[in-house]
Length: 114
Image 1 (cartoon, rainbow, N blue to C red):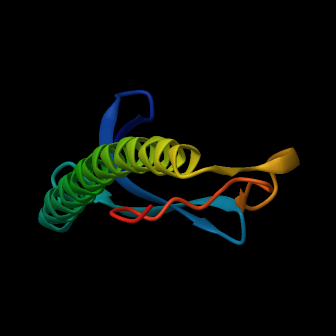
Image 2 (cartoon, helix red, strand yellow):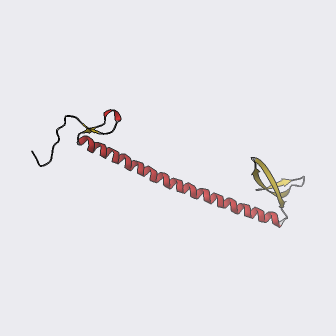
Image 3 (spheres, rainbow, N blue to C red):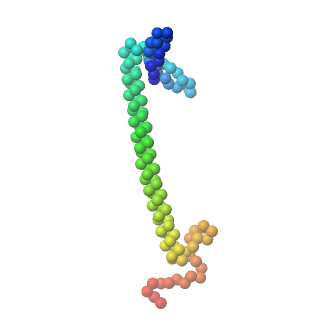
């Protein structure tokens, strides 16, 4: 999608560029005097602006998602440390990083009873 100077006098021509089966193909639309070429250039510019706006919106969505994911990871880390502290205080341990277990030989203390 570009105006190109061609020939010895440097006249402008409008070409649309696209890919077909991985190869770049240029499609002639018209010369600078042609109304069709001018309309095609305006349409292509509008499509390009739309794609740019779409990419920017997607980038904003990703940034918002990353922010939320970061906050969630922080909350999960805090909860994990709180649960670990509570389980250790209750007499549990994790042998060799396996699931939590109650320690053997610990006397169970019932609140309010002796």
